[in-house]
Image (cartoon, rainbow, N blue to C red; front, side):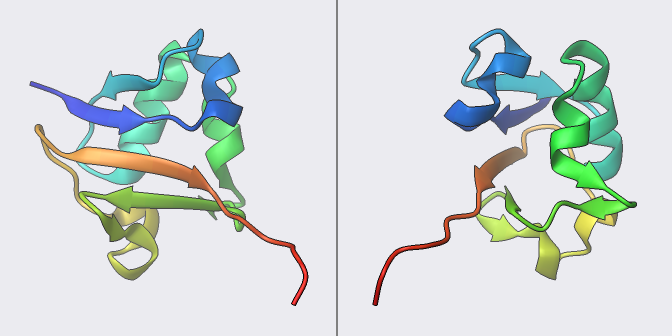
Length: 92
């Protein structure tokens, strides 16, 4: 069993169009490194300066990883990681 990573449409060019990919690691950071090894360029779209990019939201089993430990958040087989681009703009 592996960790499922759900990829938003805007990043699917890095995964050959795949909506989800599988990876391994004991932390979110290791997981991102693992999937970047097979889907080059994806990691740099998620991580910058040793942390998650500001305009990318990442959820582990529906919990925002920013409140769980960021890249140090533990992950395990069977978990689901969802990547979502942050939404901004509009009028009031």
